[in-house]
Amino acid sequence: MAVTTKLTWNEERSFQKLLGNVSLRLLYKSSVHGENTVEMQNRCRCQGPTVTVIYHSNNIFGIFMLGHSSEKSESFIEPNAFFFFSLQKNETMEMKTVVLNSTVTISYKTLIFNISSYDKRYLVLNFSKKCIDIAKVLEEELRVTCDLRSTHLECEVFRVAGIKDEGGYINRITRATQHRNRLLADVRAYSPYADLVSEIRILLLGPVGSGKSSFFNSVKSIFQGHLTRQAIVGSDVTSITEQYRIYSIKDGKNGQSLPFMLCDSMGLDEREGVGLCVDDIPHLLKGCVPDRYEFSPQKPITPKHPTFITSPSLKDRIHCVAYVFDINSVDNLSSKMMAKLKQIQKEVINCGVAQVALLTKVNNCNEVLQDNFLKMNKTMISQSQIQKINKFLGIPLSRILVVENYASEREMDPLKDILILSALKQMFRAVDDFLEDFLLE
Image 1: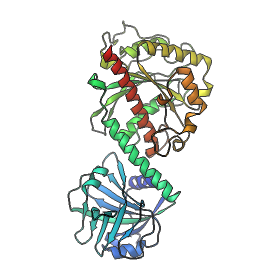
Image 2: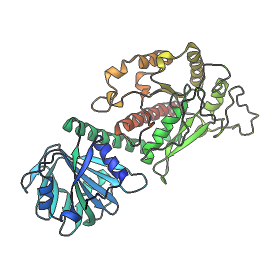
Image 3: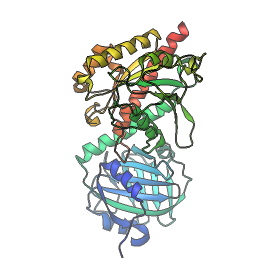
Image 4: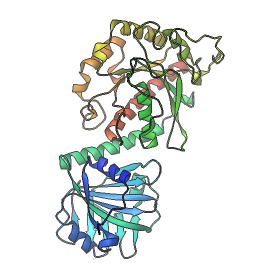
């Protein structure tokens, strides 16, 4: 009879994505092969990189080991070869990782992961008592709640095949995940300047098909923990978006709304009487256009419209405009489109609203960021598309943001998340500058 894993298909896909689309082969299952580390060692010895998975009622804990399992049933150390992760068994399937140098101590009935060079335990798997202990520091890093000596349900060990670039890839992807989680915490903790408004509004403007709606979907996916498609997207020559939408973002399915909104608009078209009407722009910026307003390319909204907001407050206004461009189409912008964009920018400047540029559909997000994930690399900054936007709109390089939206993917990618979250942080900084000027005025 074949031995099968407790992992669901989605859980297994999450692990494979974390490790670089590898394949997993089950080597050991405690309920089948015996609840002792001797049998575990016998089955996993010299199998190469492995993942040990511990099932708990609310979470799944995992320990990835890059090197071979030891020939001996003794303590051993592999610097930078371990990382811990957890998968919350809820609707978001959210995965957390932390890289920690660790020593493993093995006895007949226990598996103990210690902090390197210290006698401090991270995680203890005790087969005889069928329980796990997890250190507070690891619990906080993985954002899990686990009672001391919690009962575990099962332990499995998998051989990991197909690790690309071995240590280099694992090191980069785990550091990327850590940096992504720090950015996520920063965005969650954001508060608009001087608490002048509770939520800021970012207006997405750009040519048809530039990725405005996809950017909103990508941002929402990050905070939902899974891919979502709330805003309709498409590749038609005319704008798919016909309504003005003011989207709030919730932190999790039933979480609180985050302190920013993304306002999605009809796409711009170089032809007159097609796409977003330029005469709608001042009303959008001033907060006079209500959510779900139906755009009319040939008839802009007026104060006589029944839903027109006649006395908008600061919270109703647009606080930042993000000009959204397909990075692959920037060099082919027509003179008519550029003229329309300059006309729109004049209105934005007259209203004193903050501005950024957002370039979507970058081919490979791996090549955009430096190794520390803090800045774009010099090769990316020098690309003609970025230089063209810098000269054409006069937007500083620091506020020309590059992202790769989620399109046809099935799983989340920490590198994509880094670009998207970094773009949001720069938008927040631009808004704070706007609010500070507003307060001084």
